[in-house]
Image (cartoon, rainbow, N blue to C red; front, side, top):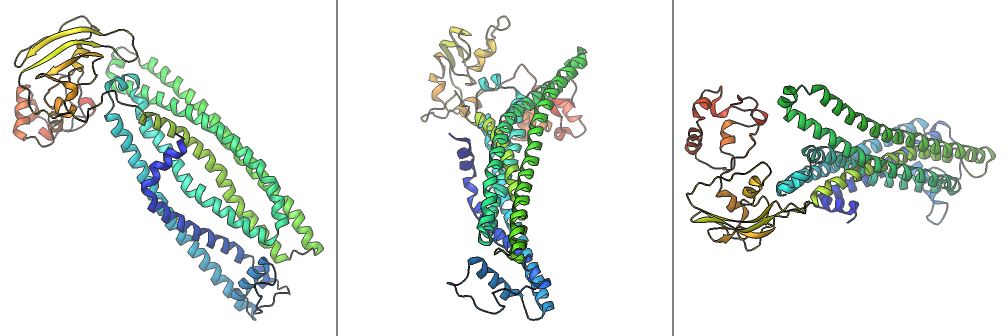
Length: 509
């Protein structure tokens, strides 16, 4: 599915705020165009010129050009017999148009910002919720730093791209069209000259944008590698120091950051070259139009000084939104590269699927049976476990022994369905575990992992993890059974002591 379409589908729930922003944008464009148009009327006050259109004289809809009718309407609003009164009227109208323009600019910005921030917040949550549902096999394939980079960095780049799309890609084209319409009304010949040069600018913008998108994708992958190294070394800092590997890790980190610098600098060079090229093309258009338009005024070939001044003001006013459109293409291409990485994560499918008819179990009564179990990892052709069969009765203690890598942990991981068996079946109280609700199945089990896993939270919340409404006394009993009650009660804040990342504030024992 096209990435642009997928992003739009995610934005759909916030259509009301986007619609309000669009409506405010139309009013903003109207008053923005009006402010530029009316500013040119200043020349009629300071340098009065007698024209065919007399102040107060009505021009019928079937007489005069559209330009003359709009000018006549503007003059009737502003011009008075007394030049000072005309100047006062002009100042009032310019102030009002600029004031209203900025009011609608604020409404537009607030509406788009809400939609943008809510979209990104919900997307980040969606990605995080999705990875919580993925099997352990996914986390064996993906580095922790890469996952973190997608959720933090790529979603943030997408936020900036989305912001640029709403604020620039929607508003600025309307701005350009409005200014272009006014330019056509004043002089279609001069406008046509400018349009002949614009395709060159569009071609440059497109080519630069495509190149930046490719480089942005590689940059995102590189920052993911940097985050992976950072995560590994911070988590394993005790080992790094114990083996005196500080210099090795510094060199490894420097190598990755230098690659990131090279990729980023290439992208910046492309971005920097696009702006001067676009501006040079814009100035070329301006110079050409100044020459042709100025000749028409000086030779009296139908273009009045007021029209020429208004045309030049509108021409330079249109350059800014055109430049914004150049930059927005770059930002969107960066965002699409990041969106591709985000969607690649969302497209990951869990191979642990719960059946619609799965039933809930509340207790364990009889036995656990491994019935001719085979298992191999998806990326491997060799079986880790082959034809494993045994039965464990309730209350029986079983130790599974074997050499390192024999598959002991894998054998146990099959029971809570961290992985599914490749062939065979596992029964709990005579029921295939694939027919049991996964959450209820795991609620029957207590798991002590080989690694020490502690969260940066209170002692109480770490012990009670997995039980939202557990009785405090049960937590106390669990601590007593683990011979931890005495040292917990001696901690500065007792049960409310925050133990730090991976329990680093506690002693190693």
